[in-house]
Image (cartoon, rainbow, N blue to C red):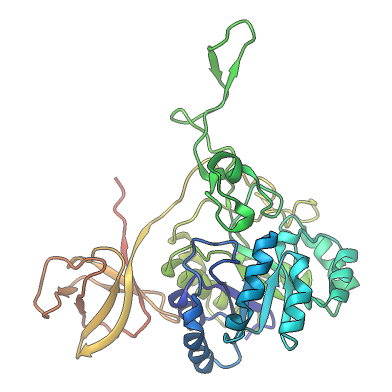
Length: 410
């Protein structure tokens, strides 16, 4: 196993278990009111015992709780009120952006560890040193930090763990400190309710002083531009550079992404990290699967922005296209209820057509003769989301396999 921690997103219980099954060393999750992903599903207060049981099944895995909104006074009061409920969870560490809650959490969770959120915009060695003195054992650097500076930061603070985002959506604001959503949609990104206004389509035009109401377009496609939307980060081909820079933990973005995304991306980075330690580990086919999940065009973010290393798409992070997607996530295999017949958690309609199954160590299995059964185990032409249905397959399936279908291109 790699010496670098692989930290995967757990937007809810299902994604938490998926991340662990597909190779994550650790998972990060939010509670209902205090997470910057308020619409991710998140972990509910009545699920504390569920997490306790999951942690027993995955010994040695680390559970991070994100308390990373910017706290107003009412949020502080709410946090203090909820502390008895939070204590019921088996959290090992808390991810914090607002220093105001650090003392509260340290007093109430004396054995917990604390990570500084990327929202705190920590970008230099002196700041890391100060946060270390406060009690943070891990600093999640701002995404604007190039590799050469990460190396200097780690050398100056060898006892502080350095975490960096390695894959997923980026933000056109400074490490997420964005006011655009509040301005255009009345939804605060810094309170966990981002409307993703940077992904919207915009029309840009010039209006000349003497010709009011006459607009001249600047640059557009089909009448609109995505000038505010960023590419997605993908550092799977540069993991050795991250390791050499002193990164201790690689973080995958995506608490609001699908279970299929969590499985495929976590699996690819697990294989790639293991290949760093053991070159005999085959990972390239799993790496190529990153292009099958829904994503924007990939780039390497700001890691090479100092030009010290050649990278073909370093700081050119603006995206001129929307999501790219080759497969549709259909659901998850559950239990084998009869020989060759499996219950399934259905997310999109499944028909008796060609489907593929992916597993933690199985690139994919294709079934061209799949049968779908209704709740009475009778063959049918489709089974739908939120309905009971079963799959009949001769393939060696296992619980937790992801079901997908290739999207036919026009």
